[in-house]
Image (cartoon, rainbow over all chains, first blue to last red; front, side, top):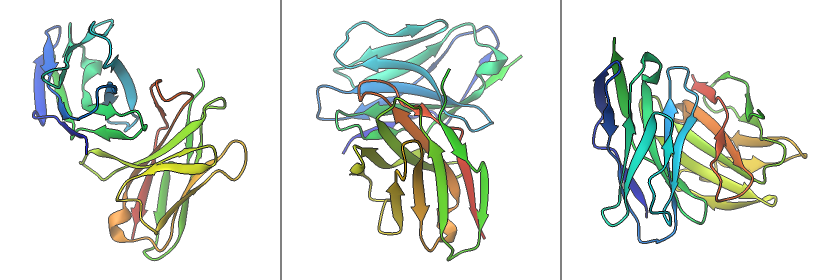
Length: 113
Length: 113
């Protein structure tokens, strides 16, 4: 079974600084998708960024980028120029070809003004 | 932008009662999902649904649970004989293709008394 591990229950960053959230996963599949979702206090699940496993190039969305290391099964999220609105729970997620999606336990990000 | 909508936003039910959580996926989406998030814990996959049948389900999705697409727009999760431990946030999600991100609704907070 695929598992997703987020080893940082909580992280803190100063406004305008950069923070990296860690995620590792375990799978025997070669083709899959990885996602980072943001969950603010309102409890919505908001897609931040996605990565297809067959793509070597790391995905980037504005201030958000990933460091995808397929061999190491690592998928970290970097948030640059952190803003107060970035404060939320961040979930790393893995989706296999059978469409089953697994989430990590989440990392609570605090942004200090 | 089209959204996944869930109703109600908060449902309070007596233990042992049946509850139906409703979702309206994005109209041209073909794959539908339910997830559960117990307070303070990670998001857990319950079930995926395609072509009017369950395509995948987790060990959580036992005989107490059922899903249905009663018409062309709604996708429901029924929980029979609710238990205290069913209290959680339930998220519905949908996607048009399996290689596309899932779009989440805002969730229904289910409280079992």
